[in-house]
Length: 242
Ligand SMILES: [Zn+2]
Ligand SMILES: [Zn+2]
Image (cartoon, rainbow, N blue to C red):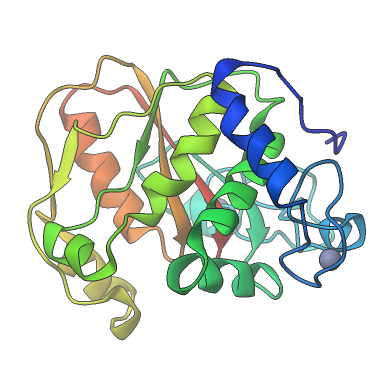
């Protein structure tokens, strides 16, 4: 990570240029001036709990003694349905605060910042997916919240990585009990039949995008229906792995 977001003078960057002129970048965590056009100062950016030493299959933290990029014991025993998880950070402060603010307060600035941070993390990927699919919300949940956080994250990410967003290939057809109230086995059962592929995505390799991945049950169920529809490889991208 070189810490320098690319400043491309493209037509789609003009809203950002105008916005930076009207509202100079300010750190969303400590109110200091932002660095390099980010709403984050250099100190806070440096101190984020980046998930650097993590299992490539599930993004869980690896023991300090484990070789870099080694698969964790749990994934060796029972590999998840998805092929890889890339998490920007571990689910700790202050990323927890940013994600909370993203969901419940000034979502645009947070979505942009989190999208930029993810784009920076993913810019060096050698095998890029052909499509980014934000995890869909059930329409009822969408109307309660007014936005899909995965889609809001996907917009800046798609723009910067030059990978299209696929928003209409899957939908959530069943409203589920909030996953936080359930254990791992119940989470899996709760999600069975929750998603439907409405049209086969025109891609062999897709990335599912969500703000937080907890047990991976949601991503696993979505992977199951995508693979059944013919997608060969499904990666999962998220801001934080809990
Ligand atoms: Zn700061
Ligand atoms: Zn793992």
